[in-house]
Length: 113
Length: 116
Image (cartoon, rainbow over all chains, first blue to last red):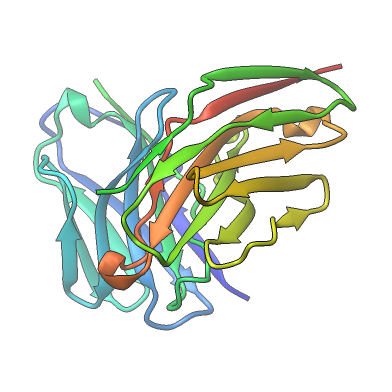
């Protein structure tokens, strides 16, 4: 069966510190991978997506970056966090074929102090 | 660009009753898919139901059904026999064919509260 793991679940970081959130998928090969951010009480905004190893597309200009070093691993990073980076971050994957819905990880709640 | 609009920020319903959540969308694609996701207080995103645009028949999953009006670009979710566990934020989402790479466009969400 397919599963998606995302960690950490909660993170509190000071302004200016680096960030690394990790997402891994099991039970599928060559999935599309996505990072979303959700502000409090709001909808999800797509940050990055990847259709293969080393292939990253950014949807919005921001302080964050993403990488895909392995087929089923997707990393969200920042060199220096800003207060505006606070939020709830969700990783998702999609089996190839548009009739498959995206499946989401449990999310990371990031608070910047 | 495609858009999804949920015009009801909050809704409430009594347990065992029926409630309908509204969603309208806009896309220039002919091949697209629509979804309803549920986000309970745990904040996990759970797929509720999906609809392929080329299918005229409305999708149904147990107590959940949709009213898909393609010409009007409307995609509402009906929850029958509401249960306390249905309390959550509900998101309508759209993905198109072609080079969209499965990217989802979400509405702003509707907070549904089921009262005992």
